Image (tube, rainbow, N blue to C red; front, side, top):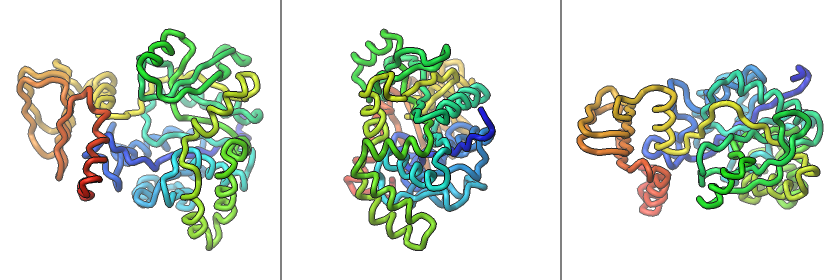
Length: 372
């Protein structure tokens, strides 16, 4: 990658992480927790990007509840670049706002959009692929997505259908983006062999993304432009609070990538780089269990993984235990998730860990906000 390319990582960190309840709470969600190691997920995200861009060039899009915690964790990221959304409006307005803000400074800067809570293995290979993507994004009005080779017919991820090779032996043109399919469709995608999971990691110049927002989200674009115009002035917070909630609540996949792919693979300027590195989005307690079992060698001989100072399992297998304060004893149980915090205890079957977020929704409806 040429050293002259101005690369700006944009970290999306506004999620509430409800599927990691009860550890994850609104004011302390998954991305600021140390689920895997001593550093939080967002600290790991920023750290792995440092070889390509110093923290002073990093932007974070988050919310009012998390901004202080994130600022404490990310020393060196300018406070003015930790942007606090006044309302949750999904990824299209968040990405678009970053594009309009950075376009003012340098339209040719390449934005890298990164979720704040992914785990990446083989970081040197990750950086090498990212460098190729940055160069491709800087070479024209190109949009680049990192695609993950699917390991199973997952229904919780979006998919990228790829087409022809684009000039080398690994860059692929994108035919279509498809949001979360049912199991039958996911199995068809796996069998086809030309589908990748959508990692949520994107590369494009500030100009390219800003123009795409203007084209595909025309009612939201003027609002974001007005917010960006007020950035750095005394009226910014007022304008932001007034206009941002009026933006369309929509993902960047639905708002930009799907309609752009409809132009056809040779006209859309959409490219997929297969991500030849280990990746996990740690989307649930089950995925954390599987990741730790496979990569951290933390399981016992029966497949139990424990984040605790003490536990004993008799005739039990394949359980995940988090209990930093209490000794845990299991007898004759399998495939459970057990998470003990100061004010709540979760016991769930691993196969139903995706449903933990429903507990948060139910607690909210019952008015038990102290637990969320």
